[in-house]
Each structure stands twice: as C-alpha cells, then as structure tokens.
Image (cartoon, rainbow over all chains, first blue to last red; front, side):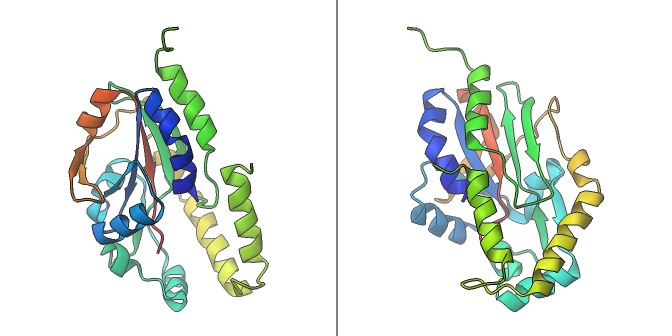
Length: 133
Length: 88
C-alpha cells in the first residue's frame, strides 16, 4: 500500500526537482516483478543483505516464534531476501537534503503505522525553492 | 479519498478480526503484537539515524539491474528514501 501511495505523489515530487527511492532487502528478481505489477516510475533498490539498512541502523532480527509463524503461512524470507537469519529493516522514511543531511525521519517499530505521503510532500516543498512565477 | 494510514488501519482491522478472507488465528495475531512490542521496547527507534544526522552514501542495483548511487540522486536535489521490508 505504501508503494502505491508514494507512486501517487511521485509526479509532484519530480516537479520539485526531487526524487523518491525505495530500498528493500528483496532480491532483484522480485523487485522487478513488483515494479512492473505496480507500474512504478521511481526505482526500487535492492539492499542485498541489508548493508545500507544497517548503516541507517534499522536492522532487527525476527524472533523465532514469528519466524515459525510466517513459515506456517508459507512466507519465507530466506527465499525472497536471501536472509537465512531472518533480519529485516524497520519501515522508515527519510528526507535527505543535497548536503546528505537527514531533514525528516519517520521510523516506527510498528510496521502497521506509516507516515502520510502528503506530509512528505509538504516537507519537500520547504526544502526546495518556490518556482518563479 | 482515504489516507494511507486509514487504508492500513482498515486492512489491520479486517486481518485481526479473524474473519475471511484472512482467517488469521488469534494466537498468530498475539505473536505479531508481542514482536512489535518487544521491538519497540528494544529502543531501536531511538538508535536509528535521525534528523540532523549525515545520511550514509549508497550505491545499489535497481529493478532493471542498473546501479543507482545516492550521490547521483542528491545531485538533482533532496531525496526521499523509504525502507520497505518486502512483500513476502
């Protein structure tokens, strides 16, 4: 749902001269399929073995009892992400300015909560010069 | 139109009701809640990078196996980076 919601603001984001990227541990063969299925115009980047997520300090290991539960549902992280240890990134949305400084950070351990894309768009507008009239 | 969070809440409510189409067992929902509570209690939200920190540079492959680097993206202007755990 979040990917579709980000897609809805992408043309406005681009009009500001800014960009969106999604970073996921999922392997490229899955991101390719997902990208096509959702008709996305921004990139999904594969963060193999969570190297970038680690640098943002977002990585956690799924507890054993949840690992077993997901396996019983038929989902296997090891297949999608090549992650035998069942590590995942916390959902997070950052706005990074041209000098690589983080200007907005929404990080939530509860993966059912996501910031509103409209809020992200409002914040981006404050970081970009207003278009000349 | 419903906001992203409204749609997420609606999905969560349907899932946690235990009714079709998801038929989620009560024990499963409890385990998910427990894991989220434990992760929150671990303090990881506070140790993650935050406003004012320098963002690490990255260079990763996109869905078409083209290499994309943060320095190229930031050359165009501010950048939104969203971490997604996957659709597994």
